Length: 225
Image (cartoon, rainbow, N blue to C red; front, side, top):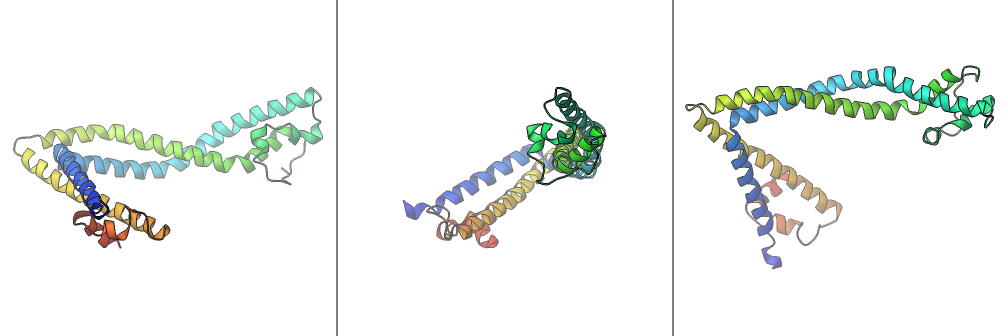
């Protein structure tokens, strides 16, 4: 049985190739190119606009909301006598207290508690909050452009079904499927090499003898190595 392990990568690669060719041929070249360009434009736009959107949301919404909520909590504890104004940092929420670096001082007098808490939030929460907001902004912009660009994809898909264009569009779509499958198999081969090197030889299925002993996948495996 061990001697037939080389067939497993080849069978998997053949199934992947057949599936990609079938899927791309059914879509056609025009549909694939339209989806590709919409994704590229969406990615670029999301990358460009995600940072300004995240900064806007943090500056005008998130920061003020956090500062107001924390200030109310601290002021409430001061009024109840739980803490003193000089020891206001001990009244911070637990989640915010865990983010504070030991020995941190906001350098703002306790007479302006709201400003002190705002400074503290900027020093502790700004970076993770901006990162999280940028991720959400990126996803939002990307999916909005994908939805709007779906109309462009629909137009090109319709053109690809015209009688004179449909056969060529289908054939070139299948060719594109071969290209996509080849790129994917090459990426898988790189990951396989990385696993083998990291584990000092791999395992019974993922090793140089098994992955390099067949015909189809071994071509990409040798190319990646």
